[in-house]
Length: 381
Image 1 (tube, rainbow, N blue to C red):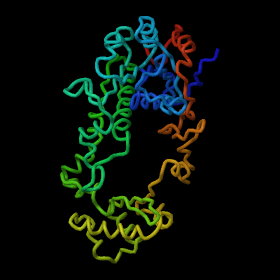
Image 2: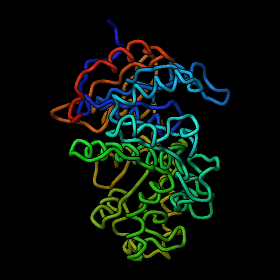
Image 3: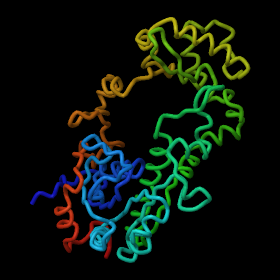
Image 4: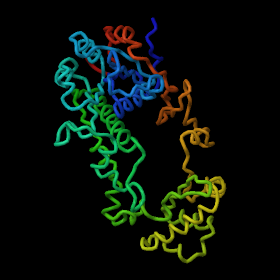
């Protein structure tokens, strides 16, 4: 029988995850687990909701998963999900607090059916607090947590790369760590439990290095005067062709390398690296210098050296870059550019990204092979 399931491979082979269909960080977390070998089953609606952004065959976050379509408003649909939960190691849901409870699939019900379950809850604001029921998106969560404050240039409106800092970094990654930690606890003989992964919490936690630098005086509470948000030696610059490059020569030995390659080794103005009062003028001089040649020229001079340099590439350019091509970082499947699974494992390597399932494509197959009376790998009954 065709199950739609690839032969298990990767370090998470044997782990089963139920993912309630959603958007953003929850599906990305499920994709990450599927990339590493987990059997992730999406519980889809029978039809897309009116507010859903349906990417169809371009929905990369669905890759490598299987799809079961049910009507959660019916007793039969809820029972179908609970039967899957009985055989699952973890559950991912990203609804507003209280919605899963109203559907009859809240933590109490699910943990009663499966005491070993790790119940993962993904939200922006968290399960409690004054804003718990408010709508929001990545940019709002990282704004409130403080993570957005240092982004952008002094005097300009802060703007971070869409979805990366909040949804992915502060959300999906923290949920993945929480789920795996919970599964490890269960396999060590502990109980199942609920993981409350909030983007405001995760993105705040991600600033631990900045907090340390701030306490040590290296990141003042004034934008543009910190060692990572204002120096001429840690910045982006426009080139003559309108493209951009980056320099990040933070350590003194790397700063010396940058000065030497730019012909500034003997310039007295550049000898005091950490004089923040001089940074605006020195940054302006470097702005003029980098604007005098195109990006390719600067790449030829600086790329691959200890000057801590890299061009700012579009995703398409990144996929063609010799370094990323050599590592096989990117791939293209069914005409869709995407990154291969990360991180990499020497003994249990992950497979290439699996196919993107259609809505309800594997309903019969999943219900057949997830409800057989077979022992669960690595979990005591």
